[in-house]
Length: 604
Image 1: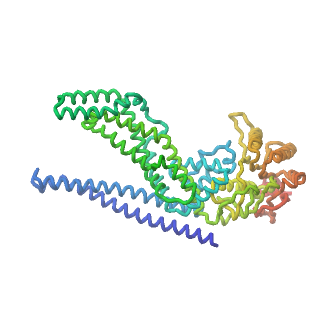
Image 2: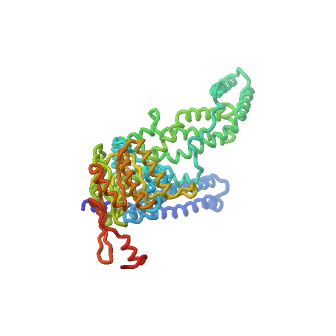
Image 3: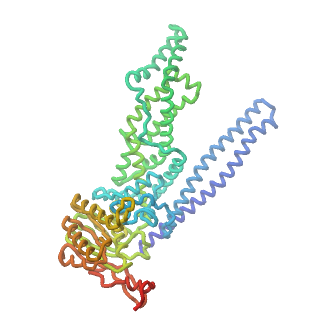
């Protein structure tokens, strides 16, 4: 009851926030119309009123024009601010509308990450982590393309370190209830992504070549402004002629001109970098200014510091340098500065120093922000599901779960089960009729292990597990281009699992109907031999099968292998599934029943 009340509170907050931002959006739209008329009025008035009502070229003429045109520029500025506010308000409205839709079970239109599907991955394809109706589609709250990739990477590579998992849990728990920070971070990220799409992709590793400033030439450039100042002073006091300044001026222009092509390239590259980082500066500042308690988030904040300076300060430092560099765009001022001080070359030296100190940090900063985005996705999932729990890691229990269910199945439809694998009984053979729930149960266990390995909550009342390398074999795919049959593809997958087990010394596997590409006798013999090999090399996991003869393994290895099953009930001409996991081997079969019901075979 408490969880239901909490979900209602969460839904109410989303509705209230959406309503507040919708009202603000309407207000900004109305202001935009007013500002448009004011811009038009002041612009027309700046030229019409002095021309028709005031004496031409009189002081009042110029004063009136200046006041009205200044008003026009002021309203242009206000319109720009209003546009940013409208964009922000619209993004907040979209965000809360999305959360309400997902809470109501409508999330099929969200970005599904189908391009991330990898049939060769250890587990992601078998567990439907990407694509339509996937876990990625359900939990993804990334705003930038880099955050999108980071979340995918985290789902594809779970943590096996207990300390790391605990720190991530603390971070996600803290972010979950700092929802104002999370939602602001998301909106700022969306504004960045919107700007990034308008501009070319920037390669942070592609630094401009500044090697021409190495060696003695660098010291010459640094000393040139002092030489110019000395010559100017001597000319002023009359010790040398003023023509010496002119000679020095043209000499400086000649030196700068020899490197003009390289300087232009550097200016273009560093300006692009400056624009790119300026888009991230608000996001960096937003994260830097937030005070966190969890060690993981504190460490991420430290990643945004270099030698005691914050990333935002370093970005501002670059911005100031770019502003100085942009003085070259003023032809008169640029000529004076380059002729007397080798200005462009001096700025290039300053940029070379900045790159040498901070180029390695750029990728780290962006990666840190992407990490926060990924954590925000898990935190939002945690916040939206107060009935879920943070799992506990264990060195004794392989997997112990109470009321565990699949996180993508709505609570009112989800059937939860208890399940336990310990260091003694390490392999569970699950049997059951078609559609009884075997595959869903396998994906339930696997999906919750993925969430657990990322420090996230799981769909269970309680869950303890031992972090282990995790591999699945649930849907082998044939490859016509490689001339591989389905059966050979499955054998290759099983070979990979066995090699990984020998390499790691221990892993958790989930196998669904192994060796289904061969005859029943061969399948039984091969399956029994494979399970014994998995047992020999300390493998642990779950095997779902229709092969009831595999139950004999629990007789041969009663302390290590055990049987669970799903049953089906026949009620007249209908089937009934309760999807509850039981001890033992299934006693029910439904293939012939279903075939008769569908008219595929005659009734008796």
